[in-house]
Length: 458
Image 1: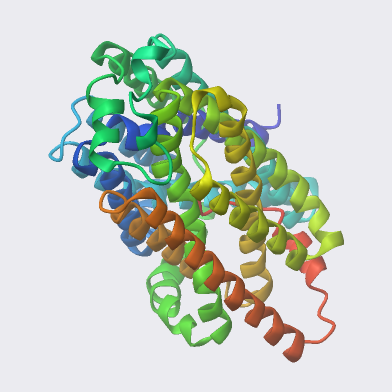
Image 2: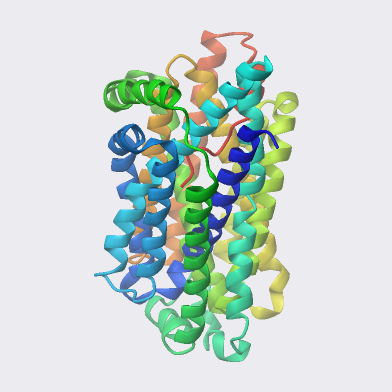
């Protein structure tokens, strides 16, 4: 097997193992640790730490450790979070959340750097175009990585499936859904009838073991990048991150197009946070039991992955405006329906339909927003995508931050309000683009920049 391809596969399966654990654990935080909102507070802290980490740590660690050991070391930060869940408290989960957040940005930056260098090395050797090889490597990576959402949630559902269903479901279904009785619902679903400590420890043991295997896979089988290549790339990153990225992140806000994109970018954080923090707890866990969370989230992950592939292909024919409109209408319809719906165990299919529709909309938000940033700010990608990470992470922080203090229906109205603002601001952006740049072949650019999507996701 060609050595660079082997390295791509090692990284891909390493990330698959790591995010099988983290993805499954993230979906369960609001249900497992609902006391005083500990679970969602830890998620908020993760994204707050990620904002700081994105600005400072990646170039330092990659330059000092190289891509290989930055990836391995950052993966250990995720394992620390799994260990913190064994004895979850404010004194264990919050510090390990900070550690995970600090390790998140170096992990993804080192991965992107490694795949980019590996693609260029092979392109030079095979006399191919570097961009084409890099896109192929990223495509292979995401093909393998995206399935982590399925495996992580499947593991949790199979383990928690040993719980007796009648003992797990909330005694008062009126406390489920948009108009939840915050205290009572929490007591019914987690304190009195949650999974046993033994099952929780088994799940956390499996997740921790998956993370350890990921680290060993990287440490033993991933080749270190040539010193001259790594030095050249990290020096470039060093300049971009501390000066161009850090300072230009805020200087870039002088561009009115970037300001108009802020609600759209933050909405991505709001809608993902609602699904992970509220839908899983107040709808699925409350009405069906915690062992159904994984199965329901599998439908989200599967729909998200499939639609990401499909919409990435058809965007060149439909254009981004039609896809954004589809996502907005889908999310708006889901929000209204969730406000009106009273979840009941007899309506099992409905739980999966909502998560699948949410996955469809999220696939559009992720792929097309990333592509839009690449199209609009082609000459200032570093500052633009730094803004993307900043505002999406801020959306997560705010949404997880108020999670404990508000009823679900209030949070649904907030998500709806942000969506409405997003639609208006995005419409203004498209109007300005059509006015200033008539006839711009945006679909061609979207096809190019949309081939590498979701690289900024934690």
